[in-house]
Amino acid sequence: MGLWDTLKQHAGAQLLEVIDWTDDSNDTLVYRYPTFNQAITNNSKLVVREGQACVFVAEGRLSEVFGPGTYALDTRNAPIMRFFQSIAYGLEEPYKGDIYFMNTRQYMDNGWGTATPIMIRDAEFGPVRIRAYGIYSYRITDPATFLRQLVGTDGLFTTDEINGQLKRKLVGSMAQVVGKSRIAVLDLASNYQDLGDQLRDDLNPTFQESYGITLTDFTIQSISLPEEVEKALDTRSKMGILGDLNAYTQLKAADAIEHAAKNTGVGGLGASMGVGFGLGNQVGANMMAAQQQGVAGGAPPPLPQAQGYHYNGPSGQSQLPLAQVVQRVAADPSGNHMVWQSGWPAWKPATEVPEIASQLPPTPPPPVTATYHYNGPSGQSQLPLAQVVSAVQADPGAKHLVWQSGWPAWKPATEVPEIASQLGGGAPPPLP
Image 1 (tube, one colour):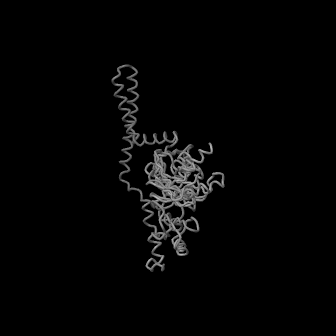
Image 2 (cartoon, helix red, strand yellow):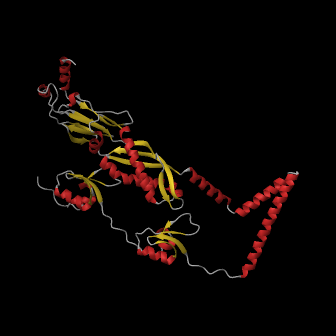
Image 3 (cartoon, one colour):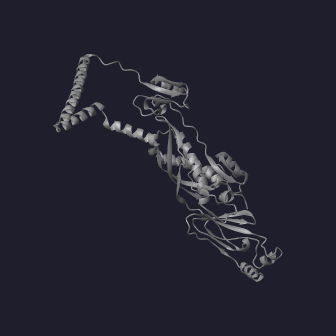
């Protein structure tokens, strides 16, 4: 580029700018606004639209984060004078600045899935391998953290640069959540919503602190079993549909006789005779059983036995009556006490069995201590209510922000009723 062209560009750069950005893509997270020599003229206007945030980096340091609105930028690049300042630096602007626009809308319908099967332990089937897939959504909620931790000086940051990392985090946490839930494999389908919400709540503090983003939705669309386990389930379902095997055998025998009667050949006659003999034997056996029941009908029924359970807990595995199960659960309420009875599809926690739970002494709920994610002059951390109040009282003029799970965004600490009530909100403000 010639000297004349360079001078013309410098001359055009002396004018005030109106800086704004509209995005028609579906994958752009961050866009750095292009300026001549990366220098922004003082008092230039910045327009930030809804669904956007803007980070101003002045002279190499993050200066401020702007929400929707119009702002006047304060820089050391005064019109006209900036040209004479650049002469000493070979027409290079000495006071540089960058404007990073960020999309704060939700990025939805991002797919996730397990690349390899997840091994979990099921109470009924033992160790099984499962596969899962679904979709998730997220949005930028802390532009400053997102810029520092992920963007750096990248002029164009898209979803492809972060989705891979998010998927790996989600799949790894998915295995932990399903394993800790102790939900039977046959009951997973009815708990997709609860498992997705639990994983979202567990991951959000880490995502917000490490990346400055919030996971707004996590949906499990399917959890599938290996082929051999699915075949075993199909066989079990078929047996349940057939019900009484004796009645089923008699029905098939009657069908065979009817079919053989229609066949006048010798083979058909032999088949009908064989089936007839088999059916006769079956009927005779049924009559003998009925007679035996009639003879024994006059005898008294056996005495009722105490209700017993197969028990597995901290003290080992054994078969115990109801009273001893209650005694062991009451002695160690925090222990893992599992019970099973004939006919149950799987082991159950003892506290979920009504007969046992009704005899256990009531336990008071644990005290709840309010905890907040805090961001202030001393940095970012997770603090209880008392320490947040102490931090605000120690530096009332500073900016103290707090956040809890379920809140859509950070809030000033003085706007939270629980905190404000302990700050002496009824006292008059200090004199100017």
